[in-house]
Image (tube, rainbow, N blue to C red; front, side, top):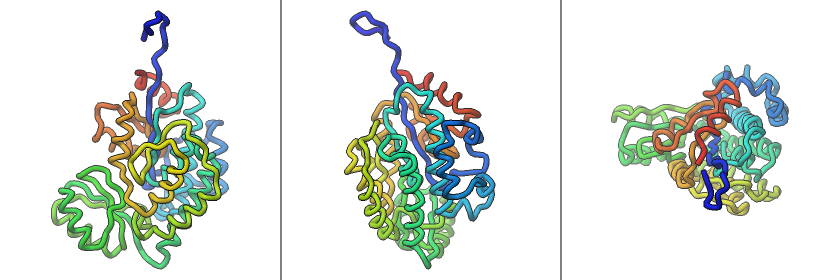
Length: 319
């Protein structure tokens, strides 16, 4: 583009980064992580928490569903992957957001938390969540394909709470195993597609109030830095640049509905050129492309090497 003064300026990059949550991890995710030098500091913290054989452990469904393993893995691998990308990018993202535990990686990407702080917090978060439902069998149910009103009526009757709002045709609900099983049967009979997720706690619901309170105290002991780019918060769906607001929202989201549909809309309002999902799987990029198809989104896990994702960002994000 040419400025009115006559100087020719290069097009500026404008892109968003999204970090996924649980249930997207798989044994073959981001196979290049182990050989990229920039990834090693974050992966070392991962190994300290879960062991060096984390890829092998991912073959076990019960391990994938284990909070203590999954939340650390998701946070560490996402930040490792971002380190590999960031070294090749001249500009910071225009905005970042993370889905559920992915919000810790978003805070790390934005510079609000250091990589060790984010990874250690993920381990603490998982422990607190497990403690909150100790002695109870709980989890999450994904529901699509049925009018939202009808879904909410059934779930309210069974005392299930909406954990994550994705769009009017897709929501996640938290509750006990017994009630989730009953809801699955009832909703399926009404024509819905209902699926139990590989998550063993009733996340983002009143079950998590003790965990949210304890995590808030842990966050009070940390100094959150001013973000290098704005972060859209799970708890409110709003963009924030204020560490005090971000601190409160990070603990609050444990015990309230994640407003993911609003998060996506707030990201889109930044008028970014494209969106990249950084982590294992492609769930968030699929959600994005369904809701905002005019802004292209891809998953890092779809690229063979980080350089391919960087080149796509550079080509697609120019405004």
